[in-house]
Length: 193
Image (cartoon, rainbow, N blue to C red; front, side, top):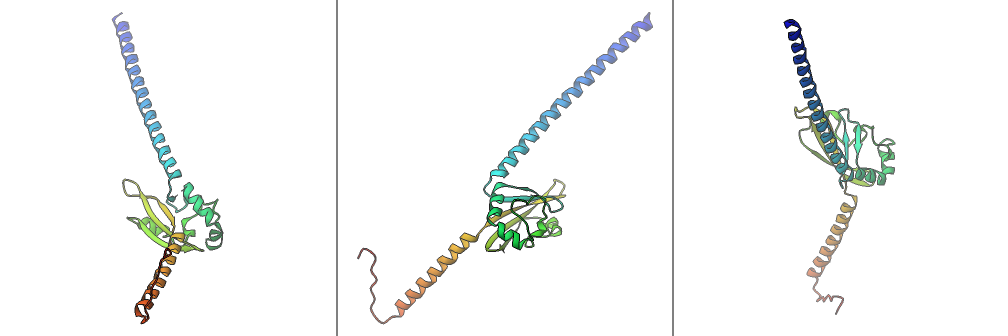
């Protein structure tokens, strides 16, 4: 009888131990699920922020293939579609994901990008467009290369306006120089006089 009681007590203790292990595993699974939900929410927030940010950006993987483009970059590439087709080997604005960054010969190669330790900035032309690009490596906490992010800024209008302002300033300087050197008295009136 004692051995039967001991066996029953042992079985109860084992059941209690197993129930405790199951409860601990269930709690661990719930915590892991909560952490996964939190990480998924954080990732979604970051993706949504990238999607709508004003800076045109793309992300390339370890093989230098584009894995992400945001809306600002897609709009910029749409404006440059004909230049892309002619100057970048038939690349089409609506089909950027999956192409290699090496197609843009002005951007650093995969090997050069893997060696970067900081952002590299470049100004270059694509058709009639003048672009500033910043390429920044993405690294793991251990320093492993995970890919890169490329930011694009179209400087075409800004530089054209600057060139026009410089031309006007040079013309004004020539007029002033001519007036200063003139031996004839000259009076310049404004619109109100």
